[in-house]
Image 1: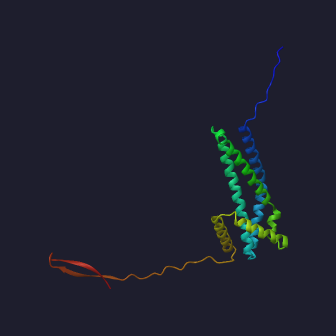
Image 2: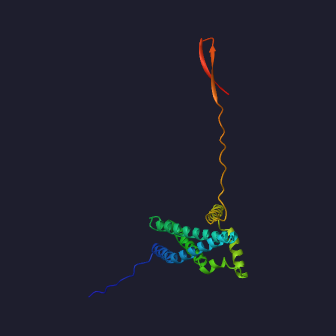
Image 3: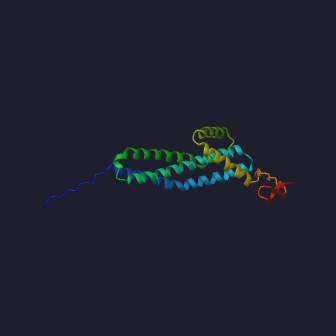
Length: 204
């Protein structure tokens, strides 16, 4: 009776990339429920701060939320792109880029989880020295992370909340003045060359 030998299939770099990306997407999926709880609480705090006319803290909370949403969007978009790249026949040519992308995604996910805590959300409401120190540090850090467009979107969102909650009234543009147009009358003018009469409008 002959001996039979079995060998374990060799795990390729492609297999490793697929596994790492799957694990990363699974972690993101598991984190989403927690993330949504935090975002809901942030919305409550933002509205409460606007109602109290504490606009500086409300804006800080909005900026923090904007950054979190940007990170989530980036990670989901990046994961989808990497998933498509892994399935291409050119994987070996872009192998290093794929693994680098997965590593960067892991950093983004870590940052999301670090910031997505109810404790840090509540710190924006707190007046303690520790909380104020966190607020100042957060504001300074966000200044280097948010784009000009994102900052403008935050300002607009805050303005809409102020209007919605009756803190300020919407700006009403004045109606354009209605000016009566001059009346037009006509007179008959005889042109000698043709021997005809033509009516010419003349403003009165």
